[in-house]
Length: 69
Image (tube, rainbow, N blue to C red):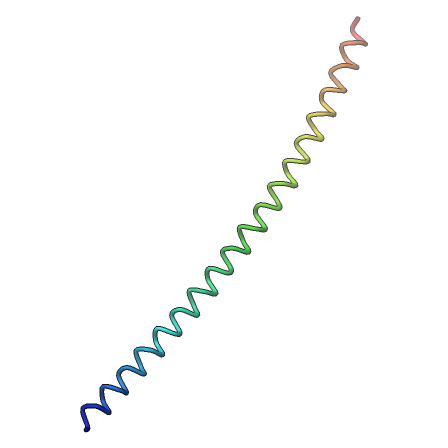
């Protein structure tokens, strides 16, 4: 009987440790997903800014070419 109690105690400890590890892994995964989402949003914003600058450069180039004629 004493061995069964020790086995149950060990199983409970193992289960608790696995539960804690799983919770920690889940939190880390959630943080990584949030960081990826933020990075994606920043990249989208930078892409918009680059497109805007590209359009401005094209307009400036046309004006400069017209002025040089």
